Image 1: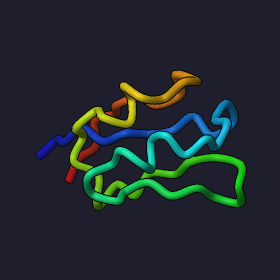
Image 2: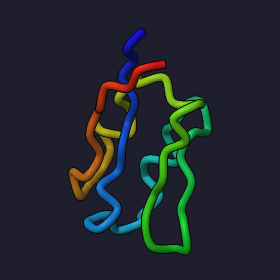
Image 3: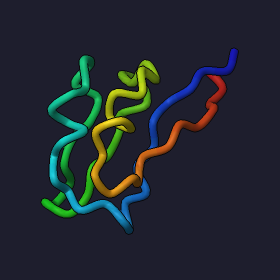
Length: 65
């Protein structure tokens, strides 16, 4: 089965925390105060993080589960 999950381009992320605030599953954390990271097990692919990211560095990827 293929599902869509969010992925952060960590080299371009500004760690503002906007994505973390809107995630309904608490699937996003800020790592080392430098970038956001998505827990793929918790992410449901709702796209809320993508819509609020001011740096436009979150994308949806397809993963096999």
